[in-house]
Each structure stands twice: as structure tokens, then as C-alpha cells.
Length: 451
Ligand SMILES: NC(=O)C1=CN([C@@H]2O[C@H](COP(=O)(O)OP(=O)(O)OC[C@H]3O[C@@H](n4cnc5c(N)ncnc54)[C@H](OP(=O)(O)O)[C@@H]3O)[C@@H](O)[C@H]2O)C=CC1
Ligand SMILES: O=C(O)C1=NCCCC1
Image (cartoon, rainbow, N blue to C red):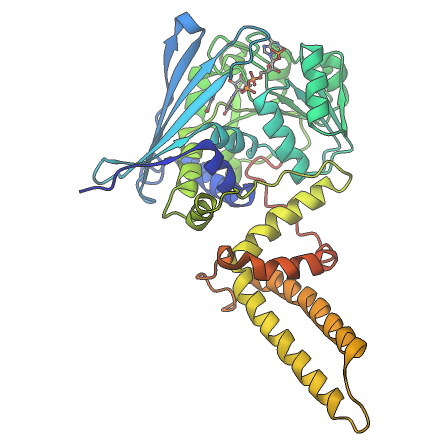
């Protein structure tokens, strides 16, 4: 008999999913999708069931990845809420099934998955000014991932409600300029993200700087728009799915714009990323993105130990978002990369490092004590003890991080840090300064467009 399904709540999904794990899987999934190999990805266009009475629809997003043994569907309810409503626009649930038996293996909250997988597709290396139109849930996830991955000189935000702009600026913790109009936000921006529930254009081509990249995330029905015809017809248009765009995107359908490529085509190298031109990525969201995200968070999957840890500890592990300081990018990438490495591999190396430290200390003290006429005691002992444990602790942590990130036999898969945080804690406190000197690793490769 099949096991009963596991329920994974939003908080747990949030605690296990990280961009560093998600980004390469999304990249792989989008590439597979665009090859149109039905054994790699089978994903029909979303079925939308109108919820007329509530100004919304329920989207069904099934996906089968035969080669990977992943079968899933997302149910997503989207509502065009009344202005000022505090109810969420998107509610989602992802169901993972066993493709052979057909039983449900897991049911998980789909809002974090939706927010993270949507934002993770949009990258913009080298851009200096980011403009976000909209201040809701997607606006925040896009702000988080963009500012984690890239160092913008300026971030501007606009939404039609002044108070919402002020709230967004406050919650972003500084470094964001609230704008009084969409035009003010957009003029001169290198990257523009539209994340509104608008059904009419909010972004006009005449405002958009030549060579800018637009990530258009809202307007997901065939008669809804966020971008005007001028922009759609003058830009090079990328989509996540051609079929999806031609049946669901008002911006594509009503403007008559030509779809140049799917993101997967760029990943596969069959179509170029036209970096010098004005580009639009029209995002609608795909089931395969939810499938790989859910597979990541699923028990028994790649992040199983994080899920177990999150469940067994009263506190949950945190998805690190950038500190709102000048070094936000560096800090966020550092913590995103090093915390998991340390969590996964740190104990084993730290325990050995501490043992080595004590051995060295023992030998040093023995040697000093054996010198004719010398006896090591009192303050001398404390000095030697402090210097050795402090600095060796710091060096141990450095070695931990570097070893865990290497691809050698010194990276045992069985190592899990959750067993003995107490051992790590002292070392971590000692070596915080040393850690920040390890050097900034590059951010994970852009999922896709790399515009
Ligand atoms: N492509 C994808 O994969 C996904 C797309 N989406 C889409 O992203 C968009 C944002 O979703 P989400 O952040 O969850 O929604 P929220 O309700 O949290 O935020 C919506 C934002 O849009 C603004 N807005 C609403 N109506 C208008 C309008 N007529 N003109 C200008 N601004 C408006 C709101 O401003 P105010 O506060 O003033 O109302 C608010 O800032 C939606 O269109 C949704 O369909 C969502 C998930 C995935
Ligand atoms: O892909 C998704 O998930 C969504 N896309 C469009 C709007 C609702 C959620």
C-alpha cells in the first residue's frame, strides 16, 4: 500500500527552498521544455476555470517529467481583488504524485514556490537602475531576488496607491525610491519589472530607454494588458512558453507582436539573448517550474535533510534575504552560499578541526612546559589556550567552507550539520570576521535570459 501523502506547509517550503538550489533546476527544466521532448517535459497549456462571481479563475497546471519521474499539478487561484483589499491575489497548492501508482505523495503550499520560481527567472547582470511597477507579493519577491543577485545603483518603485508605495519603501529598509508616477519610475531604467494586477497598459514604449529589459509578469489572460503596442512591437519578445503566450497573453495576442524565442531556447543556445536591443520577457508561469520546485522541497528529495531539520527544530531555517545595506548583494550571496554548505558539511569537518586544535594545544603546552626552567601556568596558559582555539577555530571554519564547496572526496554526502550546532556555534562566533574575507563567489548563473 502506498504511504499517505505528506503535507508541507508554506512555512516549511519557505524554510527549505533557496535560490541557489532552485536556479540551476529551473534552468535545466526550461531548457528541457523548449526541446519539446515529451519524455523530458510534458506540459499542456494551463486550463483556466473562471470564477466569475469572485473576479478570478482557477488555473490547473499539470506537468509530467517522465525521465525524471516527476508528476505534479498546481492549482492556482488568481483574483483581481477590489482596490484596497487585503486578501491575497494568488493562492496556490502543488500536488506531487507517484507517476507509476498514481497516488498523491505530497501536498504543499504553492505561494512561496510561485513567488520564488517566478522571480528567479528574471536576471539582469550589469544593469544599474531597476524600476518595479507594483508593490504586492510578486513585487517583493522580485525586489528580493534582483537585489540579492545584482548591485543596482538605484531601485525605484511605483504603484497607483501612494500609501502602498510608502509601505513598500519602508519594508525594503531603505535604498528604494518611491515614485509618484510610472513614467518617473521607468524613464532611464535599465530593467523594468511589471507586477501589477492591471488589465490595461501601465507601461508605455515611449518611456522605455533603448536597450532596456522589461520583465512583464502580470496580465495573464488573453484580454489583459500591462504593456502597450508600441513597446510590444518595438522590443524583441521572449516568453516562457510559446503556446502559453499565444493562448493566454493579451500583451502578445492583442499587440500582434512576434515572439522571438522562449527562455529555454536561449538556455539551449538555439536563440540569442539580444542584449543590445530592447527586450521584453513575457512571463506567464509554467507547471514545469512548479514541478521542479516542489520536487526540491519534497521529503526524500534533494533538500530532505533541510525539511527534516525544519520539522524537528522549533525554529525554522531561514531563507536569507539580503541585508539592506550597501553590501546587500555580497552579504546575501555569501550567506545563501555558505550557510547551506556549512549546514550540510560543517559538522564533520569542524569536529575534526576542533580535535586537531586540541591536539596541537596539548602538544604546544607540553613542549613549553618541558623547556628547562619554564613552567606554563596561569595567564600564560590562558593566552596559549585562547590564541590556539580562537585562531584554529577560525581557520577550521574557513577550511570547512572551502572543503564543502569543493568537489573532492572530502565532501562526504552523509554529513549533516543539524546534529551538533553547539560545536559549530563557538567556531562560527570566533571566525565571523575571517568568513567575510573568503572572497565573494559569483552569483549562481542566471536562469535564463541573461539580458
Ligand atoms: N507570471 C507568473 O508566473 C506569475 C504572475 N503573477 C501575476 O503577477 C501580478 C501581481 O501578483 P501579486 O503580486 O501576487 O498581486 P498583489 O495583489 O499582491 O499586488 C498587485 C499590485 O498591482 C497593483 N495594481 C492592481 N491593479 C492595478 C491597476 N489597475 N493599475 C496599476 N496597478 C495595479 C496593486 O496596487 P494597489 O495596491 O494600488 O491595488 C499592487 O501593487 C498579477 O497580475 C499576477 O497574475 C503572479 C504569480 C505568477
Ligand atoms: O504561474 C502561475 O502560478 C500564475 N500565473 C499567472 C497568474 C496566477 C499564477
